[in-house]
Length: 53
Image 1 (cartoon, helix red, strand yellow):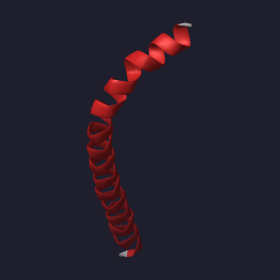
Image 2 (image 1 turned 30 degrees about the horizontal axis):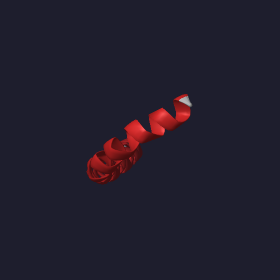
Image 3 (image 1 turned 135 degrees about the vertical axis):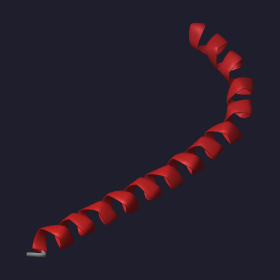
C-alpha cells in the first residue's frame, strides 16, 4: 500500500530528475577526471623533485 503510493509519487519526480541526474553525473565525471589528472601531475612533479639532487 505505502510502496504503491510512493511509486505513484516518485514516478513524475523521477521523470523530472532524470536529466538533472544525468547532468550531475556528467559534471561529477568531468570533475573526477580533472582531479585525477591533477593528482597524477602532482605525483609526477613530486617524483621529479625527489629525484633531483
